[in-house]
Length: 430
Image: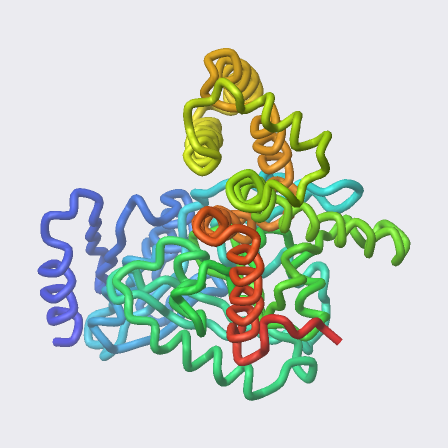
């Protein structure tokens, strides 16, 4: 009776699926989706053993990932995850055999987080393989992992990793509760999930670090952080994090402490320059030109003598051009993207000067701003500079240097109000 009801339920649910397969052999009925399973393994580990069945013996399948259940809804979910459902006549349960297809990338080097003299391995879209890469770095029983399902439709698997004893229990419970309360139909990537777990979702600053490097993930775990790995996505979330964590890189650990510290200061300086340089130019040339040395003032006046725009609109035009070039270079094929960025920037910059649209000084400042924006190792933190640059530009246009100072004060206040998993954003790791 159970077998017949299960057959009716599954066939109704998967009606219209061209890749749904149903086989009936002796007293057994088999259900699976052919595109989600490895067909060779189905024949080898399931069908061949059923054909050799002895009625006086229980069939034993030579696989380790096998479960017993009696819920029809659970059978539907297992089939959608690449499992094979085997039901026997007069038995009030079914067997779920996991034989998923080997669809996915092999382990490759990271294109997003290039680093010198460190591991070349990066995560793939397969959760189990990513967990294996982490456990190779941390072969300890203290490395605990817990699996959650998030997404009403996608039911994405999420692994919460932590080293037992190194993480505050309140932080773990806080993150578990956050994950359980995520109300989304589909979890498309880790950054999308990170925004749903943040304490301050309207802030432009990332409150989780995103990485696809198992060495960086392992280092974070040993530092007392929590890691979230998502199935079908090669990037993991690290938390809690501080503002300064986004200016660190795994290659820092190949240098002596003093050298690594100076490099991090250089990155932070580059981030500040990418935000402040253009607004300072607008503030000085619009309101406080007397603050400039006389020689530098003459240079700026001469370079702007043929420019018909105010410093503010001149800066807006050049920043807009810069952002368009950056976005276009990201969307272009890899072999032509770099050419577009370099050649496009040189040609457009030179043409803007020759046409009198922009001054020499501003083109130099825009160039420094563009290079400084790439110094930050973390892409999400680099993106936050775009919004801040625009806000500081408006303040500098309206209030000059006073506006820049006031904006900087509000920026510090905002950073001080952000919490990453209940940890203050400006609190450095001890």
